[in-house]
Image 1 (cartoon, one colour):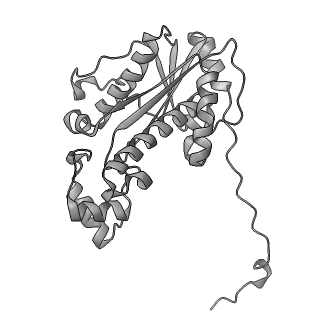
Image 2 (cartoon, helix red, strand yellow):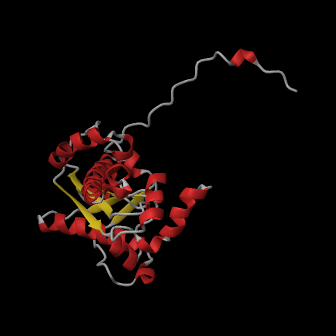
Image 3 (cartoon, rainbow, N blue to C red):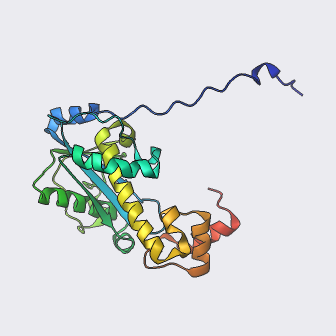
Length: 248
């Protein structure tokens, strides 16, 4: 048996560094290539069992925008802090909106097309206000907003945005415009799930926001799915896994 090395036991553990704050670096790069109106775009609710998917879009003008170091990816902020930042984001942006696609729409057209539908609704609201972005900076590595060459898989249910789209993995951690979009989308979707949770408290949506917590899955086993659940997602299996243990 290898003897225990006691010399390392009392060494202090270095605190984990928080991620660097997002910047305007990528906004300025995209503005130089496409034009000054850069839209950050992010989604929330992709992995939930219930409720909509929601897409936030925040358009900023690279010619006049000032950096806002308080902005972070919504997942790194406390719920109260996200709510506090919403007025700042709305004032900072030249235009902003959140679009939603319902659980029924997710069941009808699939998740990727539903994300595209929610994003198109957000962009449509912004364009109706007279603002047309020059480019969209989208979080992730797949362009679900502009089809990314996969249009034949989804049919023609949603008009394809004509705005150029550029993707970046973890853009919500790197780009202030995308972080701002994530905050708006998260706050608005959480509010919707809180309202649904007040109407039907059995599933704990006011707390779990529709995600697959053990309590949510156990409630599905007891009560079955509602109209707000994504019925195409094999919810019976999700509920059973809550009882036998999910090994994934």
